[in-house]
Amino acid sequence: MTNRLTIAIQKSGRLSKESMALLNACGVKFSINEARLIAHSTSHPIDLLRVRDDDIPGLVMDGVVDLGLVGENVLEEARLERIASDTAAVFQPLRALEFGQCRLSIAVPRELSYQSQADLDGMRIATTYPQLLKRYLKDNGINARVVMLTGSVEVAPRAGLADAICDLVSTGATLEANGLVEKEVIFRSQAQLIQNSETLSDEKQATIDQLLPRIDGVQMAKE
Ligand code: ATP
Ligand code: ZN
Image (cartoon, rainbow, N blue to C red; front, side, top):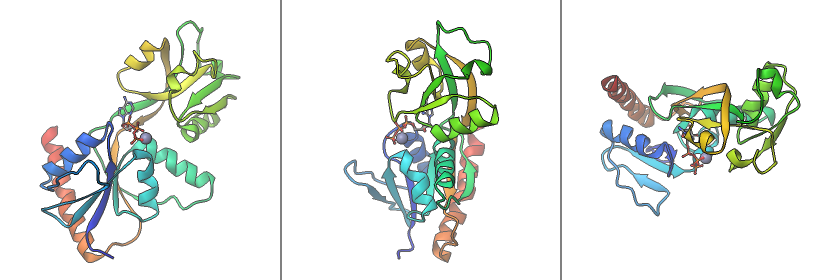
């Protein structure tokens, strides 16, 4: 086992740039080789693992990496999924971060008449977040069918695959472009820094203890 702290971040996507920028602002230096999964810091005993965001919660919870930087939407979906399949779903939340803000919302086609939540009864709702959607439906006593899609959720109603969708929204432009109107916000999200629940070596813990106050400082300076 190495004493270098491993941190999983999104390889390429909406969290990548700010994840790297946060570490850089903390004084952690990297040179990224696009073709490589791993990037070694030249300033700290830290290795970055660049993966798909969906893989980050599992990598942390299974102790494959020490820390992960991931959206709360992906994290909570993975946690619920693990609970549903009787898999250990523990981790330590370290910091909520001030980027990656978005919301998971239910949207319906513009032409559909929609007065309230109750109108969702009997609908087929397409989503990439079946666990979060099922929890919302259950908590609100709504009887709807969840249609699981891993992509192109916003075109599902037009394609006749669903009556409504439950997808991530930040500005609403994508919904608008697809003739959909946001009706219910079911989850609000931002990026989180999480840690595996096991006790780390003194060396790794020391690296984290140095990193956290720097993150706080960077976040404070942004306010
Ligand atoms: P990957 O290839 O890593 O699986 P992805 O396509 O699933 O990438 P992105 O679209 O890059 O994911 O989004 C990553 C995360 O960024 C989301 O899970 C969410 O936490 C956050 N996010 C912030 N704003 C938005 C938005 N408008 N739409 C989607 N995700 C957003
Ligand atoms: Zn993803």
